[in-house]
Length: 213
Image 1 (cartoon, one colour):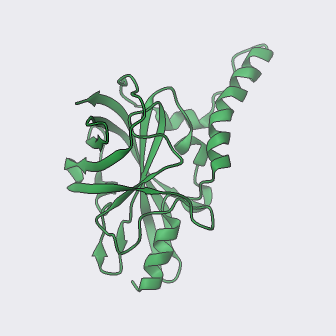
Image 2: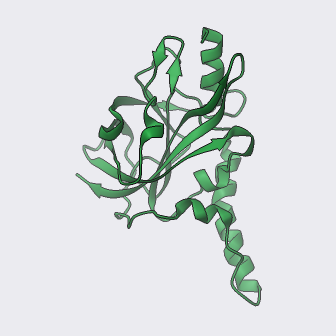
């Protein structure tokens, strides 16, 4: 993989996500409720809800506090967290490609542990080899994700789904949608790698807050 290829891979991390997409994902739930109230029967099930199937009972959400570091024992991940935003093309930006051991918290999402969906992103590899989320796709239901926060607390999330999505049909609403629980999403590249184009998919790890220490 060349430096240019690594840059292409980084640009695709996390799938395209704009502020409008997050607002739409939250508003979709409100729209569904209104339609249900106006109709003569229950609202049509939202396909995005299926992505939450299998989620464990959740711990009560906490107040906001910026994340500091990430630890995932089952994937041998221990990494500092830095803020990330959107790049010029509207994709969630991972940390710089040379920071292979650093993961990013997308600051347009809630802080991990707060009510809603927090988003963490990281590279799967780089021009020099494996990166921070290289083993993220090997996580399975029941694995723990620990996030240390600036307020001194550590929020623990339990994985309930790991899925690979094609970037062309990435279900942004289902992945990023706001919920009444404290949810977490880990995103990295996955699927088939093509020279000059990067990866054609995104691995998404779904997890819910289950304890606090």
